[in-house]
Image 1: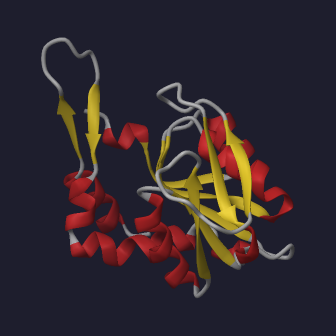
Image 2 (image 1 turned 45 degrees about the horizontal axis):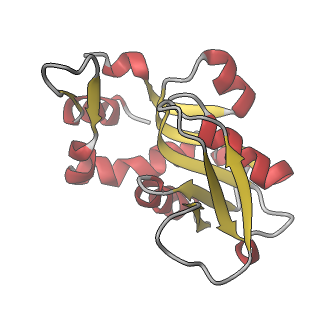
Image 3 (image 1 turned 180 degrees about the vertical axis):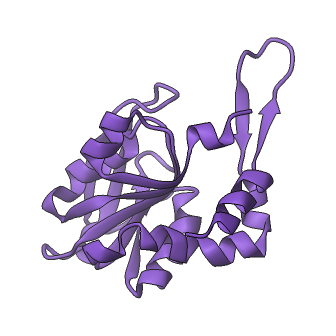
Length: 180
């Protein structure tokens, strides 16, 4: 990945202060999706983090993963599979494989599922998402995918180093790169 892309990502990102009564900032990644230079560079940069591992498919959790995952799949020349959250207001009328996701950075527990027919036992799966804070989604997808799981490529990895190592999470930026 080029330093230019890292600079673009940092420049296009903002923290939003919700004002009185709130003691935290909210991340605003919308500038990433607006800049065509970032969109052009994200797929190849994230793919480069795992190219040597030879993934055969990319799996990404909704919502933002559905934007980033296909960019990486295209850069790798492989297909893309969506990981849906249980309880969403859509019915998927075919067999799914479900995995439990431990509590995330908000304390929410969820389930993620993929269409069973879209993953082969021999697949080498790269998980792709925009941000990893606790590693909970990567952990849940690793449990769902089993030995097919290679690791997770993310734009921002702010997991503790031990979690990133355990789950093979690799990022283009760290949380410290975006400190307010």
